[in-house]
Image (cartoon, rainbow, N blue to C red):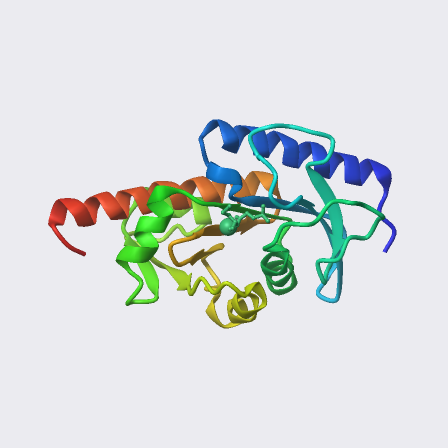
Length: 213
Ligand SMILES: CSC[C@@H](O)[C@@H](O)C(=O)COP(=O)(O)O
Ligand SMILES: [Zn+2]
């Protein structure tokens, strides 16, 4: 698949802006987190995306922040940059959902939510207005955000994604690690991520106030 230079540049600019914004919220502590945006057309067996390079300080902006990879997570251009260590999880989410952007952040509240509800395998959230950010409009709606194990071996995590994605819920948690949130484009992925973060904080604080789950 040929990628137009202007599409690549637009994707890098978009990622750069989201990265700076999330960094200002302290959503990339200790070089954690990774972001990607799909570039060009999509077919489950043919797509390309721009992703953050591995191990960078995501609070600073450099000419070496992003690279293009294929559906297997391999760089599509000659580069010395290494794609995110978690690129295979992005590959699998794109393949399964056809999303346009995927954002991954580690926060205290997404970690706490996963720990609090790990035995259930999902974080239950019910009757909170911000569920509408996922385009779920029914009254008193309930969603379940899947919690996947945080294996050290990323391919082992990636292969679990297909069985655990909830059709209405554009995100998955890794246990005591972080959230992957996606959407049709950056705007939607950001809205979803912000909604998840609000809902995790709500749920964790509520559980604390109730003295349990
Ligand atoms: C430094 S802790 C975070 C990493 O282990 C990983 O989980 C992460 O989110 C960032 O990895 P990266 O390879 O930079 O995309
Ligand atoms: Zn991570």
